Image (cartoon, rainbow, N blue to C red):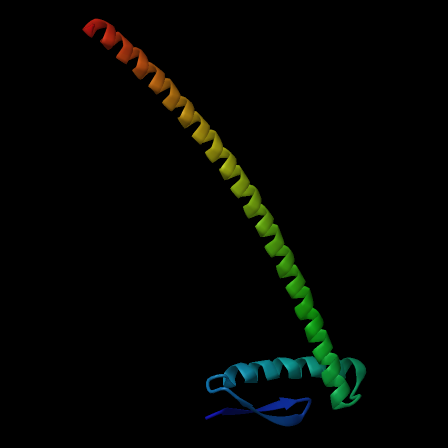
Length: 123
């Protein structure tokens, strides 16, 4: 069964259906829209519900786009930071791998020397 809310926007009531449990959220969003429409009406006068709603919608979408752009920029910055950090880690891992290989080669050389000494003693 669908939920139902009644919103008051610029002094007019609007009945809307919604998913069950979404009533409170829809009421809160409707209040925000009403606040924005009232701000527009205070600034420009009562120029008609449709114009006020369009103006309020445009200003809300403009703010949303600014926020979205800022979030996208932050995400790009974080991706760049992660990429730089992973390059550092990979470089360090490569250095550690090279040192480990060098150590193994030295150990192998020492083992060969010891093996040769043992062979000379046994022979």
